[in-house]
Image (cartoon, rainbow, N blue to C red):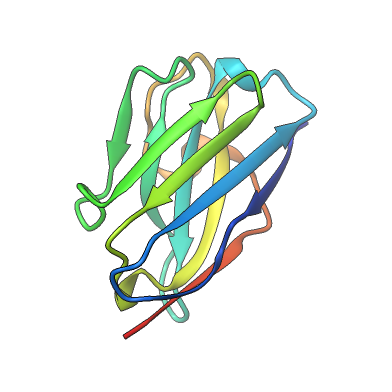
Length: 126
């Protein structure tokens, strides 16, 4: 089992930046791919970004490509999501998730991820 705890959310004006962190404990972090997803009120949970277990492969939703960057620090058991040029439509609860299988790539489907954090709210004002 793994415990994932997100932090770094908050209220920011459009055009601003935030960095989300997700600290993992309880299972070998370095051999699992990680992902960030988000869910806005009344909408389905959607993929934002993912990173392979080694950090060598990343993937992004088209809506955030060029603005968001996912990274990981295996020494700190932490995955990050740097969010720049934020827009009101980025407002959502952001969740980090851990791949169900070790040594995976940068996957995108929520069904590929077996462990989830509690989420952190990001609100972007116009």
